[in-house]
Length: 631
Image (tube, rainbow, N blue to C red):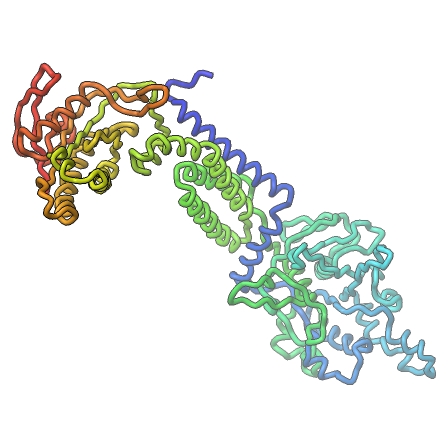
């Protein structure tokens, strides 16, 4: 395949790496979301948003009448199974207070009258008409009783509903009941409800909350579907999110004991019930009708208290009549946002070190939470899980590319140049996609040669081990400025050092880097004088000193040598001239000498001293040179 003229092979490789990682992350993320694999993770943030938000709004359409401890104490001598007359008083006062529908969240398998008959007691007015007030309330048509779907030991589903005596008194019989089962998610938290549990019209399968809404609004329980607050509810079994108004206790809740007072209708709290659908539900210390909600997930500083079933049903009523509940953000908004974040992440992953890339991934993952929470305040859900999975997949993808590709190349380059250049140079080679042309290429470079003065005399007065010790100590110091300024320590020739600037990494300012390195080497040599005096006192050694020559110009860079011994080095007239300039320092009596070509290319800021025009061995033309000063 022929590449466009503007695209190098390296750029083509990086482009394909970028596209491959991005597409892979998108496929993994969106595919996992579509398959439902991310829902449990998504629920964590969904719950946290609820807990952090606290109470979100005031309920306008529903309320709870709590059979609480005060109510139980008021009628402590009456078994709860025989409370029908007590419920009848409360229901009548609710009707008089102007409520639109009443739900009784208690289930009786048998009526009190039927139970009394089983005892074979003498016939009396009480045994015949004990439930009469309650039956009268049912006959008014405002009440909805609950039914429960239960699974038998054989695995069959059966309905446990009110006693037949009570159903006969209701205008629509069993169709005036609502199925009150709550269906938690895998983690046992209730986030959704079923408006219709059993779609078959032949079966009373409408949910408890929906039945109360239909009774309050005059809707037909046998209809094919309904519409409330702009939302359609077809007669189908489908989950709907509950738009919770707040944590447990946020729903308007009134103790039933207040409804049993003689002046109940004058109570300000009772007056608030007008126009609402209410649920009479247990909320006492002994009730087991408590369920975990999004507010139950443990978060530091927040309560994990469960919510009573009646309040969950009331929140479902509020959801239906208000039309307010968390809705998924449009895919046209969510997916472009995911792509944008992923593009930024992959671009940075491919450019940065893995540790820095990990920081970017974590930072972007946290950043996504900000708009997600802000949108939740407007009842819009930005799914966090696809972002997090996409960022993690992209990071692992780029890490795999590094381990299988770039890190292998880095190891190769490190083996070639690691002892001659700094890690920064190797990283730059990889980051910029630069690869030295080992077969040879002509480049503009700056070459530096350094030599120790009077080395022959020094070596004659020291043992062989001491000479090696001295050279190792000296080279350790003098090579640091070369590496610091991006140069390549090309070779050691006895006591001499050859360095190249501008290859294998190209720098436009290679001459300036070479001169700055030369100044640094000269300063290190001054410090090394002290080391020599302390290490070899009274040995009659000449004062330690060095000479440095720098020249800039074209040179051939390549892998040169025999089959058994090769090295990446520079050859050509520029190298020879730099070597000669190092020797000129002895004649001129200075430490650093640079050609006019290097001084001019370095630009302003390099302090120079004497200027000379000299002839060097091997060159026909004279060379203009300058003494380079250092502090």
